[in-house]
Length: 244
Image (cartoon, rainbow, N blue to C red; front, side, top):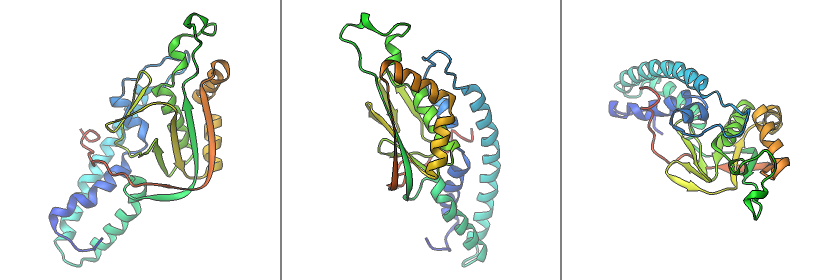
């Protein structure tokens, strides 16, 4: 991308910064998601997550306003060294913002529904039908653990995840950025494979899911990859919900 430009291109500079500063996925998705806590004892603390994100959003708004003013001023100066510096910062932030493809070692985690007995009256003791289904909270637990383990980029199914992505589960169907998916659900994250694996093992929510996996057969599989490529995010860039 050229270092020079016109004032109308200012948002092209700001959008990746805004996305990068929004933080991890699940705080954002908590606002729009209607998932419920169906496994006893598994709480996502969404209220606390939203409160944290609101504080981050306030900082984001101030940063976007500052960068917007800076870009408008700098782009008015053809060939300005300041524009080059801003562009270098944007280039650096495009990876965490999800706007460029990424390669590296990765972990993939697959979650799947448990097989149902032929007669629903034969469900395992102290369980109900909903316990046999992968829920939004289960996906969130894995995604949060991978971010906590230092994931640098992430993909759910075949879609790159950015800060404005929203995950919803409606019954046995995953809704992600306008598309529907059926299980098994696969989450792939690039980063320090050892650290991400430790974060998965340290998660109480995932430990509870794995207890159910052992008890009724929910699917849980972790696979390591020496090298994968995650595509760039190709959906709309919209941070309006983050700064409202």
